[in-house]
Image (tube, rainbow, N blue to C red; front, side):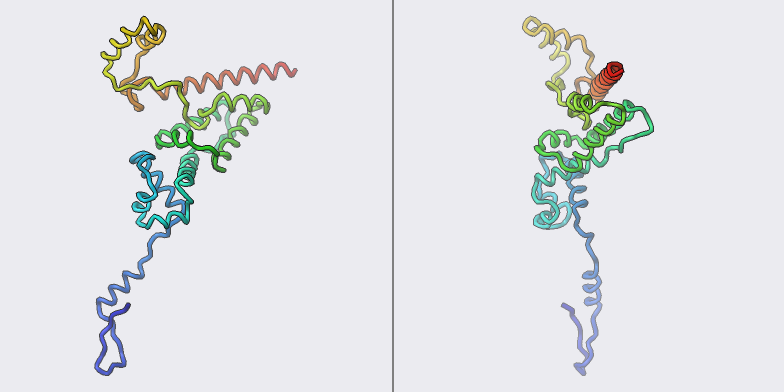
Length: 249
């Protein structure tokens, strides 16, 4: 509504300064909401407080919209999580074709790992997905293509994908979590007492020097263990590939 003052002849209307101020405010445009903005804000919130703290209501508040506005861009929380994973996968470096296959695969997997370290919630969400999105499928397709371009048979490529599993996405599903908040001296005493029951575990725990200053917390150096296993697999695949090439001669 425009508020104006009338001249005495009632024929001409003149807008007041208040009218001009309201009119100017009304002409300001808000940045349009888009799927990209929704996903970017969701990723940022998950990075800050974890994915469990993320809700459609909180996301809407962050974007300055009503919750119902989000559903024009994501159908539900599950589709939101799928889209967030797509954002993370989109940060992974594209495949290289100017280096040997092992270097190319190793570099790309470590790029995937850097993306997941930037978004610590992502690996757990990936594990929870029942169906891969087209973006994730495209990534896996390109990884298969890298092995094939490196001279792998389709059969060996199949075995390689199974062997590497989640490492292709930059994380590993460990058998158990050896990180602990227990005081090292207390933990050492505990395993000393349990050595008769679990001698092999006690031997390993007492022999391994855990890194208390690791960026992933007290426990084994997760990055070293990841790269150790990755190199072990790549070296093994290289040997199998060479053996198969010899057998075909």
